Length: 299
Image (spheres, rainbow, N blue to C red):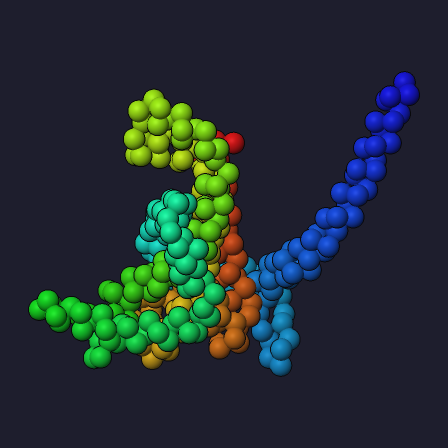
């Protein structure tokens, strides 16, 4: 009986300290995420009446976006960007993490080199890549000319602009995910690899039998966050594609369209409805990932 009372008292203290410790994070989550999300949802059912005021409009904004070809194209652009960028980001991040996990002289230098694009500001990254992609004097087309090929108009051609932006997105994201996966790889006990070597398993067999299953929890986290970030692409499009660029309709994402409607067209109700569509897409994909992860993630 005495033991039961002590355990109950201990649990209450544990709950209290747990509540105290998570309170700052919980407050930040409510103030910075949940409250704005609820306000955006409410705003999506309103329309501007001038001078910054809004009136209730019911489902008007949602009916409008169903028949809006610009929204449909933005959904396609966002999904195309995600389908191009995410597989390359995941594979290249994992390969880089495996290579950076080897005992090589000067490995810290190589890790820093891979991580450098992450600390560069999006504006600086966009300016450098705009110069690289320039169809007249860019270095990419110059390299093509050396082998007798004619380079494309990367950022002004509607057929290549989304690919060009995805390449920049891949380049600037691999370093961050590499660090996450590297931390997961370093948690794998070395004993497993030593036992595998004794049993005659080669490097490829070790990768698929030991490395990949044991790093799968970190890989799942990287995959979820990478897909969400890719669906929210905005800064690269904003910095690299001018408003007068003929390729803009084929590159603008849902977040770009939200920005355009909310802050350029000053139709915040319609902009909020667009971003709610993006929220639903992200929620559906994330729920699907959580369901499927039970089949391939090893905890």
